[in-house]
Length: 373
Image (cartoon, rainbow, N blue to C red; front, side, top):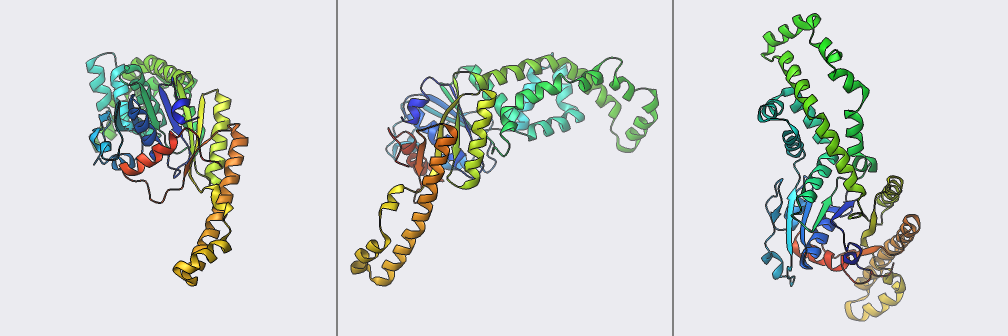
């Protein structure tokens, strides 16, 4: 079954996996293939290396979706029956937009965004990227502007970082420590009480920073947006569990990415999030194992000479080692993930860094049947 068939009826596809396995390429090729088949698709990346922009032939992408001109694909024989949009997430801006939208009024919005304590805190929260990514995904999905959203996630060194980002934020906001701090008679009131007045006055004289005022504004405005934050975190978590959402695990046949893929699948099971398909990139074809290197050497020798034929046969032997490894890796993934029909993308002759490469990958993703493992 092709990847397009497996994503039928889905509105959100989250591509997850370890770094360096072609996750960004897969996300872009998937979005392009779906757009070519008539859907309005937006692909969202968090990749600071701008690989998505480069592969689409663009100098850069911003924090809002931008439509990719269909003409970019026509010369490669791809007719866009739908629309392809792309964006590169700015985590800090996304977090700021969320806070601004939850602030009760314009004055509170200006105060919190200009507050030095908030600026430091928001940079730390946005730095984790996962929560900002899923918040942006939620906003785009609820806007109803797109038939399909494809998210290229950060590397899953720890799968829980992404899967549990909304829950972690909710737990923090509902935690006892924060409630005590924000209570009218709690820790915050003691921090800014008479005993610390001299310290804050000294800081203000030495640095020009009114830390007392910053704290006062921060906690006053924070108290006003907490309920909205909680509601948004709960809604974002619900999106990850919806039937219209699908997780796509992307890996390569190397040992470490295979372990990452197996672990990520176990976390999807544990959290009961919807798993759609496994994509294994850069697979050396098993057909290589059916060729005898010595027979190949003898057949080539008459045409290119014995020295070059021997080098070709040695190269074939090296590729057979990789093909055997890949076959064993795919077999293990099929067993561990309980997924008998993975999508296999073969090892291509060229590095995928442009639109032509995306078209090649998309061809394999949407093939009616995957090549034999």
